[in-house]
Image (cartoon, rainbow, N blue to C red; front, side, top):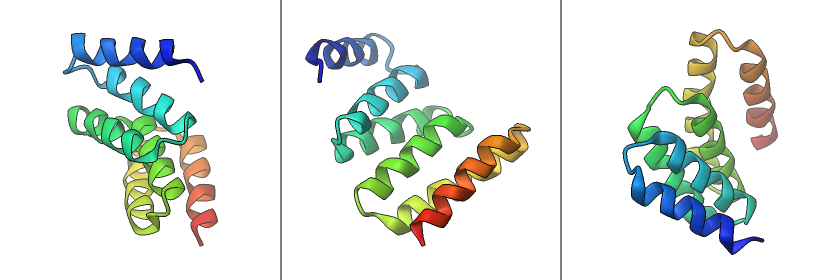
Length: 104
């Protein structure tokens, strides 16, 4: 995994700490790297800055699920699904339903 990408996203977060996209990008990279605690922390920052950020909520749910935090994943996916539907993204809501089903 590229440390250059990690440094790039950390720099972006440092330069733009109020930008949800910066935190989302960092969180997604940590998720790809299977660094779940770091992914959760970054993605929670993105969601705190923009509570309606459906993609960040889905990724946060993925991070919780991957970390074995099933209840937290279920709660976050539920919020993500509600936002997806309110933003007229039924396809995303269906993807979230599949994730919820996978949680059991």
